[in-house]
Length: 287
Length: 347
Image (cartoon, rainbow over the protein chains, first blue to last red):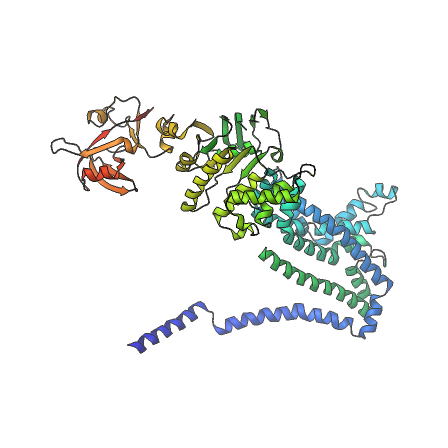
């Protein structure tokens, strides 16, 4: 009797396992496909970038990075990010605040428009600025009269990058601020705090990790953007080439070390971004 | 500080939340805004606070028109239903917030703030929680901290939105008593919103009954219970049996010997404790039987059934003290004679 019960128990255990788990070959097949895909499309290219960059040794790597054009490209990339990211941080917070705290006409339209840069091809985004500010563009006449260069110059690159990266911060903040509601802010106001104090003492501490996360993604894209910047930059070496453009120009010149050493900088940026991103996600989950 | 509301109206889109509400609250009262959900009571509270602006009408605090004044300058304390404690601050910092955000000239010293916060923590009997964060507290503790935070700026009006709504029944009972005592100690004009008539009757010195954006009645709890202004108030405050005399021949209650007075309207509202029952004589012919009863502690609620009558009045509830019910010595299914001592009449 006792043994019988035991056998039945075991059998149901087996049945349970079989009922809840897919067969061996399905499970390992799926894992194999996923891992294989990641290795083939992410790890191998990354390894190849580093392999090519160092194929002629450290010395050649450093020499390539120390070229004036490469240094100028890095500087320009930093300048563009330094202008773009703070502007889009302010814009993102303002937009998230407006959308989650106020009722106004056209609110859902604004919410949709914030996503526009995600849905438009970057090349089109670049062309928009050429059409507006280029020599034949709407405002081109006015700018050339006043001797201001926008297209094929740094201002155009900044404008295109702002356009491409403006959704990142707002996209991170809107769902969080919607979920938080405005009761804490109302409480702060009722206690006599001004709008600014309420923002800095109550709202900002609650959204800081999400805000940093948005800023990080915004920065990664600002430094890595190719399509839109390529259209407006004009590819003037040492002047309007950002790092991604410098990679392309070097590669087209058969300067393999130059192209891949610059690419390794961008790859390094991506890895740092990923590490910081995981850290912020972990922080946000705990906050 | 006295509160005067003049002809307040508020619409949300096409929904009229408040319709021409006027209300006067004398200084030092503890007032309950009572009504079913969606009746506009929270909107009214938020308008007094300045968290909403009325479409029409004026808000006067101590005789001064404050309708256009920003919430941060009204000198009100607001306690939110879900506490709205600052989650990234300790209990101490939460309570100190209102003092620390004052303009530099009015801001007290840290030493004064610390003293004030600790005295408030003692007032709400939670001094040992100063270094905790809000998510480490129970609901009742959070509510008391929220109250201490609101009191820190010494508001002239205290507004509480469903202050006990999110708490366990037992904690709620304790806090009601506590709030009443606190009000007697501080004497600050206070308004709280509730949908629980028992809570309103127990805590408030004045009750304002709201329904569908209008004030139905305002008065002391006893007044409202004993002299409901209309059928809504009678139904909403306490239990009531409703007899619709338009459904039936209008004098049946009287003829059945149930009702002592002549009908004075179409609807008779009868409180359960105004119904008296005795065991029916064999010959009396009373059709009413005792269906069931429930023990409510000190009182017994008796469910009566009248098989000759359908619609309103087919099932009646009577309430009486425990001892009285024991003396009657009734069992389920016994026929009883019913006597209505008092009714409120409405048309």
